[in-house]
Length: 148
Image 1 (cartoon, rainbow, N blue to C red):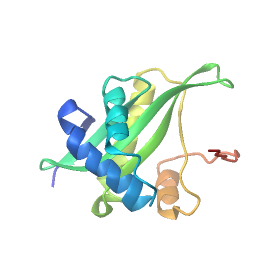
Image 2: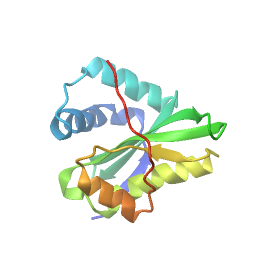
Image 3: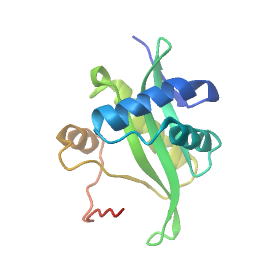
Image 4: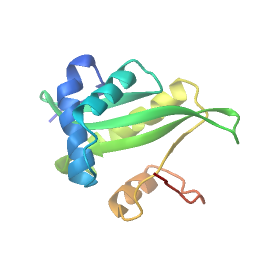
């Protein structure tokens, strides 16, 4: 069945919120930050305030999304993007839908003149690692840290 990958729009907020809930709570099993906070984030991205979101849609159903954040790289002394999210519903993993969302992020990065796109994935997400390897992603020698 045909699908479309496009920039998120205001009318997508309810469906995108549901999909982000599936991503955060269902896939990553993390606590839901709250609908109000998610809406604040989505609206900031719709205004391209620090990032942008893309959605994959099929027959009026939202089946995936990707989020790019805009930042800087000191080592490159240039603007870069961070692909913070790439999520598709289970039946669409390892399909053209997932690939096209990734390529949309990559194209946006190049078309807007960013130096490069970077991203991370969970160490145990071997499926995603294979996907990124197949698309030519380059693994780097950095260790990721987090602090509350």
